Image (cartoon, rainbow, N blue to C red; front, side):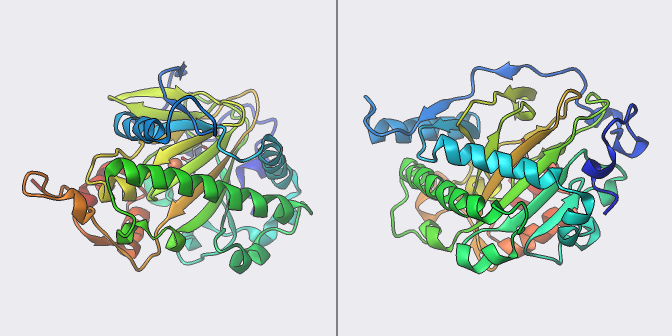
Length: 344
Ligand SMILES: O=C(O)CCC(=O)C(=O)O
Ligand SMILES: [Fe+2]
């Protein structure tokens, strides 16, 4: 438990050696925020049609794999409450958090509510990431809410409605993504109700040397879709071989295309390759809601997108095997992509 970064890092002047990344993996000079990443208004009563919205989402998914959404239907108040309760959680004493803590080695075996440090993928690499994470499943809510933290006392009261509403936004976006891909409603991949939902609350304490450490390694989420709420800058996207900063916009969600959707779309949509940097001025929390598939499902390019002129670019695989592979390979991006792609 003493290993949670948040339990020992305040007032630290020097970065401990195990957080100093090998040269090629360091973030180095600060990366400015980009104004190019699409911001899509999902509000009702806009002067453009749903078909335009579908097009905007499809284009952003192809060009960036990542976009922001505003006027999505989750209220400002609920988003602020969720961010505040996440700060209160990490502000609690080490003893209070201890009952959720698990060692990263046990991560793969233990589902449910867990608090861990670094990335969970760090062991084989010999270095750590500057982050603590609380993660738990969320859907169906009644099956999971009792395993969530009971402190701060309004944790469940806030995060219950928050995750339910974020899920609604995710489903609305998924619906438009499937429409943009030309997939029909009866496609098996469209069984939204079977999709699971997990919330990760990442906490990145202020870091003594942000140029040498990372909060979260370069990766692509092994999910369908991810919705992320941030207040302080830290998220970066890899675009055309360069890192660009994702601007924190008040009340927006950052939407990431995950690897499962890249496969289902047969590469029409790009999984967003991203990472999180730290800063020395203040701590940062990100609230990350992952939409994923059940473990026993076979993932493959949607049949409707395959033809003699559009052969499958990815293989069919079992989702559980895939997650085991990601874990065993420290989420190393190149290895994960090689696992998914058919050799041409
Ligand atoms: O904190 C962030 O901005 C990124 C977190 C992330 O990529 C993840 O939890 O998968
Ligand atoms: Fe991620």
